Image (cartoon, rainbow over all chains, first blue to last red; front, side, top):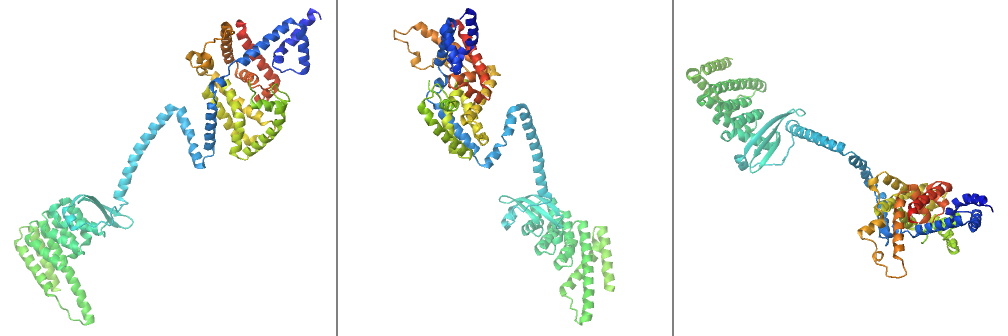
Length: 364
Length: 225
């Protein structure tokens, strides 16, 4: 073989030597390489170099032998994989929760935006939450009163020692009824809420009206205003009478008399009116008393007429009560005295007018 | 160097292997039958069968990951990510290739992804395990003992160390694909055809990658020769 042929063969065989060492040549290539190496010293030397390199590479310490010689890492990996597989088989609810992790990932990736969003969320929650809570309280106060202690029974002793901190009157648009919320402290803070048919609420209001010295006059007026439709109730009427006679504030006395308007024909009420005419220092109260007396007499007159018509038909004798006569005479006498002696001209005029009205009635 | 278990499987498929013995060759078909049954069981949702499959191959997978990543944390990530991918996509496996090929396609892809990611972050380069361990004095106790046998040449010993260090550094300069090919050829003992199957590429391409890788290593060692 000439030198040129050998060089040509070297160019063809040279690149194959590496793969020959790696055992990655076919039988035909292998035979050609072995034949060429036997006659070519250069390629034989190159082949030895390749073998030495492969040997050095093979003798290189492997990272796996150094990093995990006792296969502890392998055990850890198996354990971790098992846990992950457990997670993948977790119940659907947990997976649903995990699906929210995109949010967490987003927060992680966008820290600035996350901070801004959190601050905004805090602000909105703070502002809106406060408004919502306030609205909720107002709603309770105005529209949808909640009976906190519906079964509460206040004792007389508690009533006598209580201090009222607030009374709110609201109208229930659905029931067309007034609702009252009373905040008081007896042995402990108590809040009563309910309509005027609520016994506890009524007892408290009645107690306030009947025991004027213990409570503010404004509060007494509010309570009177609430109770004015309940003058038919014995307890309420007693408190109203007491207020009309004894309350120190003339406005309260006047309001109490007004509240007794519907019960003015009652004997006890009429006695109270007469008492007011005799002893009340306020002319406004006395005038109101005169008005109520006239009203009571008118009501009595109308009732007598009805009764006489009824007795004509039924042929039943009319028996007028001695008490009523006494009361009527007492009214007339009182009015006559007032007509002459009352220091207030308006009272005197109103008394004279009342006497005339009564006279007209008698003539009829 | 012991051959990985999958190298035996490759030998069976490609028909030859430098480490394959006749005794092993008779066992493999049975093993493959078992493996196919396991895969089918796992596809049907049998967790135990899947874990059995994992145990057949995971030692080699971790070894590959450790050799390529040179860092236990990364190797652990590769292991977990690869097997979770296998678990999630096992139902798509249709036995068109052997299970090991399919598995190693996933494993090598995960490794390549990690290596490429690491290459794009220079600050995240893995420390060279053995050279670092010498510096920190944490190498194996026996490695640090003086050689008292008179037959051994200290100069040659030092040269060997230097060559190993250079090779390890040169390995870091290989491209991810070259590194994977080199690792699978030299340390996993796979044939080029099998590597091509695993990487989803031709044998020729793998050949070129291996050739380039070896040339770079040879150049690195040139001064020491």
